[in-house]
Length: 555
Image 1: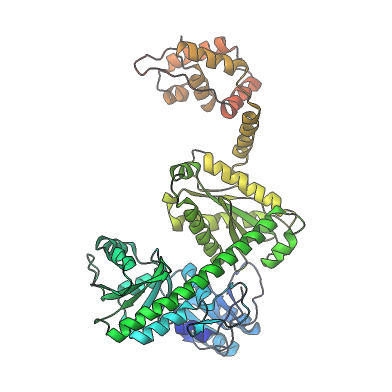
Image 2: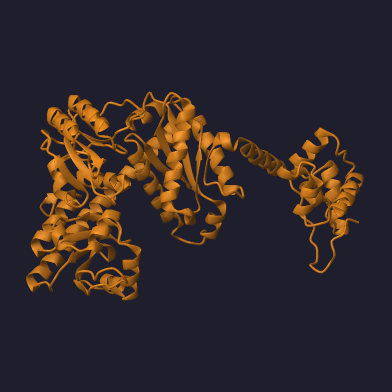
C-alpha cells in the first residue's frame, strides 16, 4: 500500500481517539511508506518507513524481538493493542531500534484503524499527479477540512455521508461527549441515536434545509444526555451527499453560522473528488481482479499490479443466497447492497493482509488472499477469514462465501476461481445452515448441481423404476416415491425411515414391498439403490398433488 503523510499527521488526526503514543520514534516526521499487518507465520519484508500493525501481539518478549527486526528495516512505528506491556526490554528495544510504539485504544478494532489510516493517508488515490487543492486544503483530505472547520467554529466536527457513516473528524476530543467518541470508534452513528434522530424528524429537517439545524440534547435510557449539535447538509447541486455535525455548548454566532455554510460548499467539492476517485479506483481494481481471475495472458501483469505476483493465492467468492436475491429482487437498492458488502469485504481482507485484493464482478465479490506453500493450511486460514467476516456482518444479510483450491500461479488462478464459484453455488442453493465452505467440503454437492444443469439443458425426465413409481403416485395419490426416498436416506433402517414419514413401521414395510413390485426395483442391488438415489437427487419427480382431506394410501 502506498501512503502519503507522516506519523505526525496520523497522530494529529487519530491521536486521543484511536492511537496513544507510548514511545516516540526516531522517524516520526518521515513519510509513511506503507501500512503493513505483521504476520508471524509469513516472513514478508515491509517497505521502508512502514507503519506496522501488530495484530495479536501480547508478550513483551515478542514485541521486543519484532521492534529489533523493524528497526533494521527502518519502520516508522509499531501499533499494539492497549495496554502496551512497556517493560524494560520493550523500552530498550524501542530506543535501540528508533521505532515508535503506539497503543490502539480499547473498543477500536483493527479493521477500524486500518480504514481510518487509509483515509488519513489517502491511500490508493488514483491518478494523483500533484498536490491539487480545494478550498486551501489538499483535494480529498477530509480530515484536514474537518480540523479547519473545527477551528472556524470552535467546536469538534464530524463529516458524515447520507448513511451516517463517519468520513472524517476533527480533534478537540476534550470538548466532545461519549456519543461522539462511540460514533468515531464505530465510524457510524450508533443505531439507537439514529433512531432517536429519525423519530424527532432531525434528518428530514436537515436535508430539507439549506442552513444549519439545531439538534437538542438526546436522552436515551442509561446514556448521559448528549451535547447539543449543529448540523448542516452537504449538497452537490440538488443532491444531499452528506452532512457536517458540530458538538456545541451554545448557539453559533451569525459569523460562525455563515462559516459553517461556506464550509459545507468546500466539503461538497472534496466529497465529490473522493467519490470520483473511489469510482475510478473501484473500476480499475475490478478490471485487474477480473483479468487475474481469467488466468489468460494478462493475468501475470494484473497480479503484479495487485502486488500478488509470483505467490500462491486463495480465491474467495462472496454472494447472497438465492432466496435473499429473490426476496430483494424488486428492491432498487439490491445493487447498492452488493456494493456495500463488497466494500466491507475488501476492507476486511485488507486488514487481514496488506496484499489482499477484492472486487465486485457481476453479482459476486471476489477476494484474492496471498497463500502459503502449504495449500491446506492456506485454505483453512481462508475459512477463518471468511467466518470472521460473516460473524461481523451478522446472519441477517444472507451472505455466503465459497473458497476455492489454492492457485499456485497465474495459470492456476482460473481454476481456483472456478472452485470458489462452485462452492458458492452450493451454499447459495442448498438448504443448509453453512455460510462458508471450501470446494473440498462440498465437492459432491457441486457435482450434483452440475448434473442438474446437464439434465435441465437436455430436458431429461425420470426413467425406469422412478418414472413408474411417480406415475403410480400421480394416479393413486400414493406415497411410494416418498417412501423410497426415506428408506434410502435412512440407509435401510425401517424404524428411522418410518419415523421420518410419520407412519408405523409395519405400514412402512408394506409400502416398501409395494414400491418394489410397482417400480420393478431390486432393493437388494447396490447398483439399483445408487441409480434410484441419484435420480431422486438430480431429477426429482414432481410430488403428487393430494387434497388435504384425502387419506394417504399406498394403494
